Image 1 (cartoon, chains in turn purple, brown):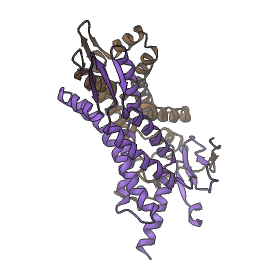
Image 2 (cartoon, each protein chain N blue to C red):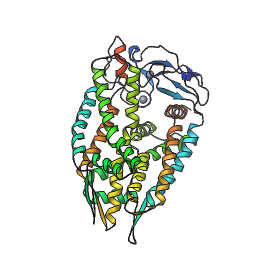
Image 3 (cartoon, chains in turn blue, yellow):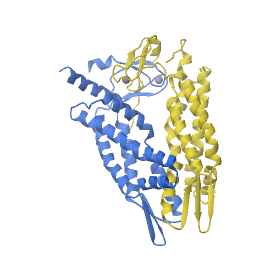
Image 4 (cartoon, each protein chain N blue to C red):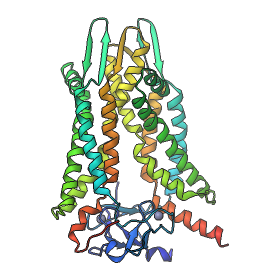
Length: 210
Length: 219
Ligand SMILES: [Zn+2]
Ligand SMILES: [Zn+2]
């Protein structure tokens, strides 16, 4: 890629202007002034991210369909899924909190997974998804609000709190959330926005001027 | 295993000083005439700014609002638990103390860090960053940038208690022996988490480094 070496980059944390250099696979470039990680060389990042994302999407469905855990009180057993918990809070009149949990634990991960799939699956098949800049923006916006790993810790804390008074039986969704946390972390670690932009741009230019 | 990072050509100039502007969405560097009123990124179409406009003012507004809401979040009731034998109304802090006393030390420490330490760390750090940026301080910019990154990284973890209250309230409500209710503090606390996250996003870390330059950059 001859034109990539001539590209300039500005550090997102301190605005230091730098020249983009070719890195060895697996290496990353850091800003000499503030230490920010500027970019990485992850040649197979699209394949890896897509694989993790598709796996995460399936686990995400499981995490939302199955109950998280159930408690047993004198033979009475009650179990809830995440959505039932959100709904129950809504019915108790805590609409704001219910909405906050719904958005951060269900909507944000769903949007994140769908956006990555929408962007990377066509790219993998050699096509350019329509209006990809919009979806890159959506992805950038939604990322901080996806809090599956915090929810996972919340589930564990609740579990310990409940065991003081109840017999608690872990549900399928508990394991699903644990796996989902790992898969999302792996997807985030292998996703390379810089690479995706340049690959989408290159494909887009090919399509416009054949 | 992580390989060592490569430092790219040290000691270069500042993009803004060269009339160059990095897009905040796609990071593409493009030329921008400072006098031109509106410029858009040639790649993704986002508005171009040398610095996030109104960053300091909006960040202050969000931080002050969070300080105000932090009071009801800590004074009001976070969770009510009732059973045939006992009835408790806990604030965030009394909930942590109760956990500690009943022997759940690990959980007490985790909840303390997520619900008390992290929100305070965020608010104090953002206040420090805002004041130092406004005074055009040149003190240890690298450490201050690190502090900003820390605030950015730990912010989401304060949502922990909200999730715990949600799960407990929903689950225990179904059983007939006991009740758990989310209190009004949960709303205030949730608002603090969201507002401080927006405040962190609003802050432009490049402002920390600008006083090292002779010129000033706006918009
Ligand atoms: Zn830098
Ligand atoms: Zn752009």
